[in-house]
Image (cartoon, rainbow, N blue to C red; front, top):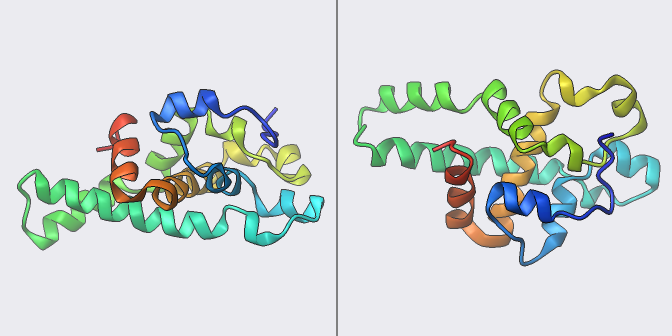
Length: 151
């Protein structure tokens, strides 16, 4: 039912091939602002900051992967990055690991099933990668993206 609050994350750990040393990052990554507002939880404990960070980390890891594959032309790097890093791809990755099932959504988001349209699931995926990066650094983020077949 997509109300991931206080759940066992061992399935998610298995799906991404990573276990958090500090689960606080994961709990923030899986907490929507709407849910936090409804529950009077500090907005510092929501996914927003981790989604911004995760977006940047995904871009860095992707660009490095493209360069490592032998591409050095700036235009070609940018073209490949744009093809690989987009809302549809990130949303599909989120769906592939059932990420929306672990997220604490607001009541309105649940009623609208917001995870089925638009950016919501992609943002959750970005937040997850931001949390992995915060917990284990760039190599952990790269490993998770590799495990999921993204790079």
